Length: 571
Picture 1 (tube, rainbow, N blue to C red):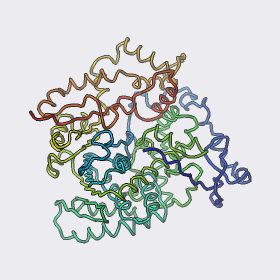
Picture 2: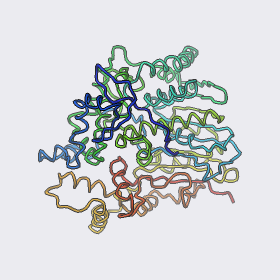
Picture 3: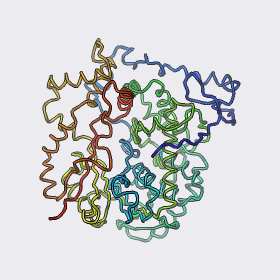
Picture 4: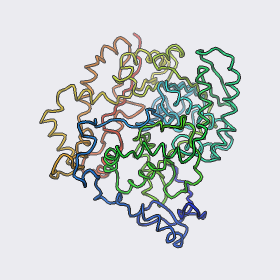
């Protein structure tokens, strides 16, 4: 989806706790290009506050992490700390790889496809893939669209249900989109957002909970709501229905400040300072202050916008009064393509990277709403283990099935994933484009580790030479030098991923799995790019350094892989 280039509206950035200029922002601060002012008068009046960001040490290319300036070993390579230890809550409420369009109708069935379409998101996580897929459906398509979503985590299913109901049931699309964006990504919401939750979503869920109050525990209970050609069907247990209703309320007595402090204890935890600064060091210097602003306040807005109205704890995050549910590193940026975000039009505030993600998400949500106004679309939501979906869904049904990374060794693994979901695809005689999409987060790394080449001098030298084409060699006084750590991180971006993927597939006996399940891997992906974080430009080509910098600044490591599977034609 192309970024909208309609005019972006900003109010003047002259904001304080007691005063807020309400005039339209027109002129960008030339020192940082993060905010707009209505006049030189407001810019001068606000300088005392704005200079903290505009002249922040983070904006300097010479900035270096505190472990380096203090000449100490960073916490993440101490003997007591693993490099990728997780800190904070255990919930994965946001995507950690960029959103994908799982349909790509124009490149497969064709824009004028004349049959109904059924899509399955078997381990959906958040709704980013759903929104992107629907937003990208060609306007020529006019048939029925059936979308089934499942996740075993009720927090995810409840949030997805709330957001979809808001977008389907609210007459004011602009208000609904604004509410969903902040329910999704902001730690605090406004009174207007809370009112929409209480007037649009709560009555529907409350009525269902009242209706099933006498039902026995343990049974799955379904409810369908319809609005014209749009509908949503939710299938939950009685306990899950009651819990979903509670996602509209935060704990009694939890104040805005207390909620803020709970989050801050995770996102800016002193014991995680080195982990935080390791990531900050890899960011574009002009983006660091934006990153830290979001880390501090947790409100997804353009940099210069007032946060004063966001003073109600987001109830879909704060279900208890003693914890922030996400890990310290969770970030809205992780769920969207760095290139798409960078290409998003924001006028003159070109360095406001979180303003860009704000508008990119908003554009995607608006496009989604525009499509469902015309499409006939039905949503089915389940909360079961993906392995048991076979008990609830029919074979030979789906044009696309997206299973996230449940095929990785840490989850369901490859053979069960293929065995369960391949039969649910439409037969090739019905739809030769029907595709099962699997994401491998760890396959290449496992192939690399199992190959024994991790310590092979030739391989190490080859990768280092390739990295040095982007990060020129310079001597390191010791391995605590942040530049050395950046180089070490970058090695996976230049790894021979095809070689190690082949090793992995051989190790898990993929050929036998395909033979037994009567499926095949597509020789070339036709729906999503095979390597979402692979460097596509050669060193020295225009844009190559920017591409490298963007991927290095993301949390992807270059080895993430999508494989597409089809049922084999019966002989």
